[in-house]
Image (cartoon, rainbow, N blue to C red; front, side, top):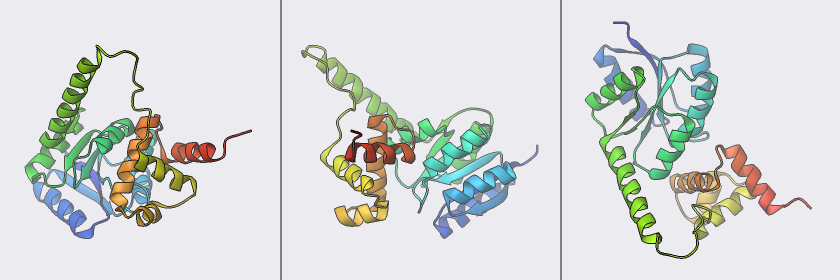
Length: 224
């Protein structure tokens, strides 16, 4: 059987090297290239046409989710498995919209990673057990909430109202501030800012950072 051609993307050198070493030891995966940014991943995916991309989500500059969207738009046949140090509902939703083929926690074993790669190469979707559990719990909670709302008068807007913190993040995005600057001003981590940004996009039905920035600017300076 021919080996699976892959590129690995993670801005943490030790993590990236660890994934590369694990995959090389399997004898099933050929590592074409490893890199530390979403921007380079897009370029390498175009240049090398790998079978699969293993992509970190939270990176400096472009996120893995945004890079996945670009890669899928250019070549939908390339499989992408997103890797994250945390299982996050907002990341899962955004990842699904970007066209990801799988989502794994970085704590997953080498056997699980290889199983995920084999599955997506067969055209299947693969999600770690913790990801599946979170999605099921979220679905269950939503179903219960819907049942409880049946007897209430009127309809509630679905994911249409931003939280106070999300409003603050949106306002700072409109001012042209970076995720790092927003985090420093609100005393939260860049990862938390990214989570809020993805949540805002999900609630507003926006599929990219560019659309979010445009929305934020138009809201700040509405046309007359």
